[in-house]
Image (cartoon, rainbow, N blue to C red; front, top):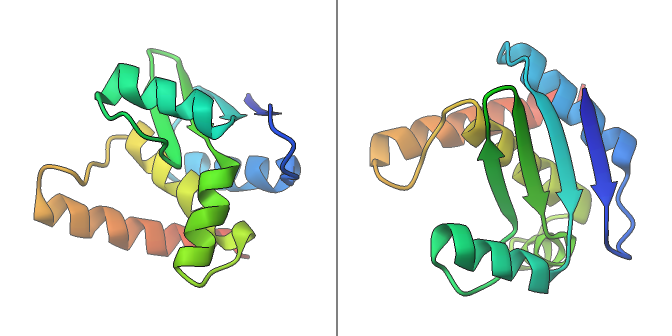
Length: 132
């Protein structure tokens, strides 16, 4: 089951996010239930400080449990990143969600350059895959 909850005033196409999630999880053979929450910069800053010891907002956080996973996204941060990287909000939101799902299924990028390259390759693959 995939649940999408938008707790912000930013419009987000929940069906589109669900479709992306379903496609990537199916392809990765991941059977966990997934909850995606869209929250404010202040809320994600608190979570980022608590879980990653970084006192600033981030675009996404991923949490994996035994049979359940949760992704928390800050649409305002995604909008800012889209502008910064000359992309659209929809494309950047897709990229961020794919990035979060890849973390949930075991991909990493922060500690090893080889793993970072592999994760980027997977992100690009899924970004193109979900467009169809």
